[in-house]
Image (cartoon, rainbow, N blue to C red; front, top):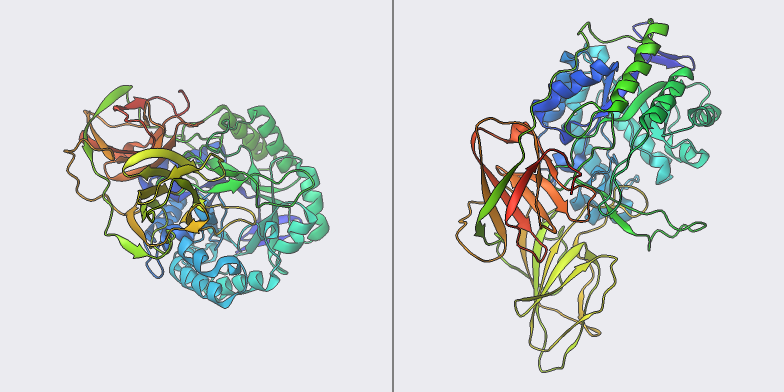
Length: 586
């Protein structure tokens, strides 16, 4: 059993320094888990940490999927000689869509999410009932490798409902979690006051100045051991902003200082991976100095890549930061052999990665119409959540009343981007937060808005937003009613398509391979859209960068024929897809 006091952790009565790295099973392919986990062990880590995203596992109320992945990941970590830390939320942040909370749920409960509201907690109970058995069965006191389980995540950065946190902790215990529970928050007084639970281990998250962070933690919890649950050794990227990097020597020095303070640590991240599909979240920029108004702060969608400038890059290759961290951890192991323990005697070994495919160009030789579903009639434009989808493409159609002259058209509550067509002609592109002159539309015109979504805000007071058109469409001051909505659900499998048309929509290319490997797929001339490989949605691409190509892991490819499908939403018609050797080169 894992126990702790102010001096540190003990496992089976022997000292244990937890040396962990974050690696999320849902941001890598299952076939890649052995290599990624072995690389953590070879770095000198003895533990792996993972979140559990609720919206991935329950995309619709009561419909659970992919539950076996968490169990499989924990079992593979055990085979690689690693203990595990599990963070099931229900909220996880993680730069993941909606912080992991299902969009269908937050649309229903609104600001009652992450509180002791009975409707929200009833949904949490269903989620915990589904995912926790795999965790409970693998706890260290049952012969498994799960050391600890988290209660919520950074709640002190959001709310103050202490009863909610206590009910979550009690719910975890009722379902058989017997290993230590913990919370994690920023090392600030108001965050530790709002986010901790009496009797539950408190940990802190930071990227620098470990001495000050641990001093703050010690003031609040003198009986708890120092633990940095998220050591931010890199950072994530937003579309349209520079790629984040951190000096490797500086990051290694901070790790050394964390260990010198006698603390346990979890590298956030050891390996980031990819926000496949529509998993990427979003943020809002911090309000201006001396302001707490988040309502007007710029919206910042997260890239498909979750490279994070981590010690292992997006495809799992070691970076200079990896080698420097390995040296720091080796120094610690030499100085404290009684604490640098591993779960098993599996020898540390860094496995080889698949080869990168040679650069190539795949022409797009066929086109197909977007496979919208049956139309839904509504007085006002329904949100994506009301249409039963988390993310996708919705075509909203209206007819302006006649007779009347040309009047300005306004879209209220656009989340997040739209192509505006008038009588079938593309006349404008709209984006949330981007001001532009209103388009003037005459009476009797057919108005179509092709709306697609980016990530839901994953951190701070603006989470839980709905997607689509959440306000209305006005012709001058008059709302247009009588809306027709047609859905293309990006979470659903692609239907069989006939690529035999010249109209804009989906485009296809065929990649023939004699041998598989990793690659990065770019869309030269593309502006923004989505890319599938053999039916798997890699994610979004966007000409704003910094990401210029999407990582395509070897397990998605096969020898022989591979189908690449593109949905371009800009006003260009890309002619090819390129295989490249890195994700950043324009």
